[in-house]
Structures are given as C-alpha cells and as structure tokens.
Image (cartoon, rainbow, N blue to C red; front, side, top):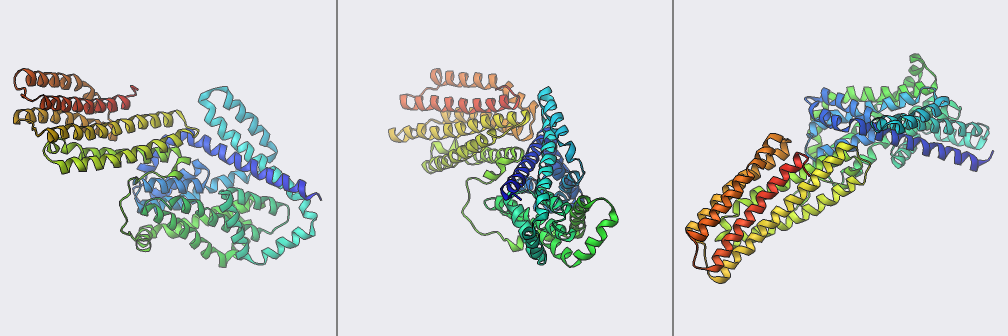
Length: 529
C-alpha cells in the first residue's frame, strides 16, 4: 500500500468536498439572501417560530457554522434579541442535518452528472448562475466523497491503521474530542461526518464509533461562532456561548445511551451511511425539543454568566470583520452603524448650529463629535470595501454602493457643521456679533434644512421612496428661500461690518450644503446615483 497515494487521494477528496460545500452554499445564499433576511427578521414571534426559522436558515446555508455566525451577526446588529436567538440556534442545528441526509444518498457514481448539469446551468444564462452553482457544488461534494471512500479501501488491509482506530475506539471521549478538533479546524461538520461514512462503509470503524464522531462534529461547530463573537456585542457573545452549551448538553445527554442508540438505528432502515445521517438528525432534533422550552431562561442565565461590565464607549458598535464572509449580515451591520451616525449628527451636531454662534464650548463639543464621526466614516468605508470584495449578487452590490454614498454624505455633512464653527470663530476674533435680525434669518433657514434632513433620514431608515421624493421636491423652495434671505441681508438689513456679512453668507452657504446632502441621500435611495 502506497501511503502517499492514499493520503493524496484522501486529502484531495476532502478538499473537493469542502470546495463543493462552499460553492453550493454560495449559490444558495445568492439565490435567496434578501428573502432570507426578511424571513429571519419576521418569523421570530416565539421560540418555536424561531426554531423553524433556524431550520430554514441552516438548510439554505448548508452549514450550521455559517448559520450560527450569521445569527451572532444579527444579534450584534441588534436585529434579533438574545432570547429569540436561542430558538434560532437550536433550529439551525436541525436544518444543517439536511445536508448530511443528502450526502447519504448513494449517488457518488453520478457526481460528474451533477457537475455537467451545474456547468451548463452556470454558463447558459446569468439568471441561472446561482442555481448552476448549487448543482455544481453538490456534484463536487459527491465526487469528493467518492474519492475519500476510495482512499479508504487500501487501508482495510493495513493492520497498523485498523489497530490504531480500534485503540482510539476504546476511548469514546477521545473519539469525540478528535472529531470536534477536526471539525473546528475545517469548520464543516458535514465533512467530518462524510469521513465517518467512508470509514464505516469500509469497515474500518464501527457504527458506534461513527456515532461518537457525530457527537464530536456537533461540538466542533461551536468554535467558529465563539471566535466570531469575541469582538462583538455582549449579547452576541452570550448567543455564541449558549450555542456551545446547547451542543455540550446534547453530547452529555446522549453519551450514556449510545449503545442503545446504536442498536435502535438499524430499525429505521437504510445502509450504514443512512444510519449515521439519521443519528445526526435525531441527535439535533431531540436536543432542540429538549432545550427549546428553556430558551428564555437560558437567555437570562447567559446574562448572569456574562454580565455587562462598565467599558469605555466604543466608536464602532455594530460592525465586525467576521461578518464580511456573510455579506447580507455585513450590510445590515453597516446600515445600523450609519443609522447611528445619522443619530449623532441629528442630536449632537445639528441642534447646536444656532447655539454655537454665541457659545465657544458648544463649538468645541461639535468639533469633538465630528472627530468621532470621521472615525466611524473610515470604519464603515473599509467594512463596505471588504464586503464588495466578496462575490455579491446584484441586490447586495446595489445595497453596498448605496451605503457607501450615504456614508460619504454623512461624513461631508459633519464636516460642514465643523466648518461652521470655524466660520463663527471669525466673529470672536473680530469682536463682532450677528444682529438679532441676522440670527433670526439664519434660524429661519435652519428650520427648513432640519425638516429636509429628518425626512431624508426617515426615508433611509424605512426605505420610504415617497418621503425621499418629498425631500427632493423641497429643494427649489429652500434654494429660493436662501436667495431671498441673502437679498434681504444685502439690501434691507446688511450689517455695517464686512466680517459679519461674510459670516452670515458663509452660514447660509453651509446650510445649503447640508440640505444638498439630504437631497443626495434621497437620490441614492431612489437609485439616482
């Protein structure tokens, strides 16, 4: 037996299997990501609905690891509460068993047929590209599984290999830990179970050892989500920890009854691969039914286990690097961060535009807030650029582009308010002041600018095109109003000081620029970019 050839075939088969899972998952995500987001945010009325949503989510993503990281991302963005995440996490573990059930069908001989059909669909029409990727991906999955199974055949004659596996099999916990470690490394429980298929069908390990592998594969899926939550919000960390505890409880409950479990599996029928797939499904269904009634309490326990600690306020709250691998989550996080930026401008900058004319401390506070917004602008910009480097579908590309435009308008608006503080500082240096009439006219234009800003942000948050159109229609009115006020200033109420006149004109121009950014935001929402 040539160990090099066996190793190459085994690792090559595993590599093709993992690549196939990735391609199929990407195709499924692209064909349904937008609908999936809407579905996940709506179907969470209670834990049972949440569990159903989790089943659908994982079935579409073809990976419980990917589903869990996605759920943690939604929790981090504040779109799903910690309590609702509990049920979704349990459901996602059941949903991913569909993948293993599909792999258990003895169709490895037809793997290349799937590849051919997938390639034809992929290149036939761009509309079918995502569906072609799904079929092509599963073709690779089955082809890789066939290679791994073939690689196991020569090992049947190796006494050393058989004895090594038998020795490990005598220590069930060791088998569980090895499978968990392998799953954590490759980040795919289906691949671990597929290896168990190959080993069991070749007679190298028993069905009982394969069941221990199923336990370990389920445990290993928690690692990626735990890592993804490290720099996320406290609720996201609690969700990831709860997911790990759920899996650990399942293993602890099943371990003492493994012998009985193994004896019962053949009663359901099917070959050894189907029995292993059934073990995987039963493990997760029982675990879900066992723990689902206690989800709300689990959420409360997680809060006690990971209490809030007083930490310095973070400039960036919602976005994290790990979400980039799931563009739909990353885009939601970017949108939430930008809504927060809009709130900062609305509550900590724009309300002070009149007050800062006479108060230097307020101007300093506005400048400090602009520095925070500038930092957020850079964070959101780089986050969106990383997302756009991914293989996005048309809807995701359009959303990312719109958010980049919105981010730019927010940053320019904050800069404009900061520039107004410098303009007003000219009055202090010259010992001048705006007259009551001039302050009243500035306040008059300010009220209209604020209305258009509030409408623009409402349109952005609610995706309301009618409100966006209202902002655009207000543009001629505000331009006309600014011209009339400037005319009144020069010909009816102009100050004798040229410095005051320049400051008055600059403030008017600055407010027009702020309004123009509100119009830009509305244009972006309507796709007029």
